[in-house]
Amino acid sequence: MGLLDGLLQPGQTKSQLVDELIAKNNNQSSMSKLFKAPQEDEIISRVAKEYKLDEVETKLLFAIRDVEAGRQGREFGVLKPEAMRFENDPDPMKSLEIQAKWAAGTIEKRFTGDLKAFADRWAPIGAKNDPDNLNKNWLPNILDKMSK
Image (cartoon, rainbow, N blue to C red; front, side, top):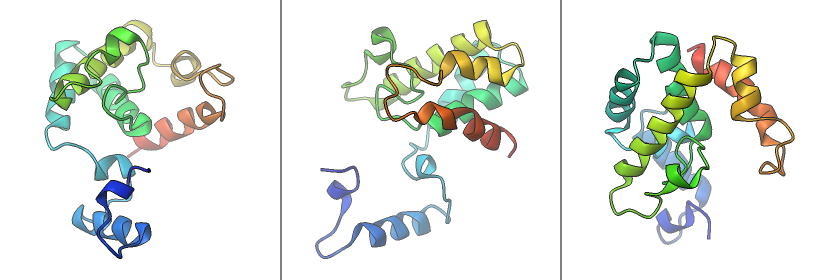
């Protein structure tokens, strides 16, 4: 069962559902924005301030959320068990916050201003946990998000 299957109304196609979701969300094309909780921006901004991220680092934090677009427990793509500990919590914002904190901490510690070097650590091409080689798209997608 796919993500959209649980949202389908009787007789509705997935294409119609996607069109409806897009229309409800001011015609935004980003799938991550379609399923974003209203308080996400507030939580991510608060975490960025807590970690004293500058403007570029904060933009990177938001871009990572959009590009990773992970489900609960993986919102920022942080796969460490400690960062995924609220994966099944009834309050999904706990998971979002802990994932945002792990991502912000990594940015604070590892981001030197060189996005290529950061991408090589965050989403290395050829990683064992990336059998479909999706990491090759990570840097171009981050650059696209950060340019807006």
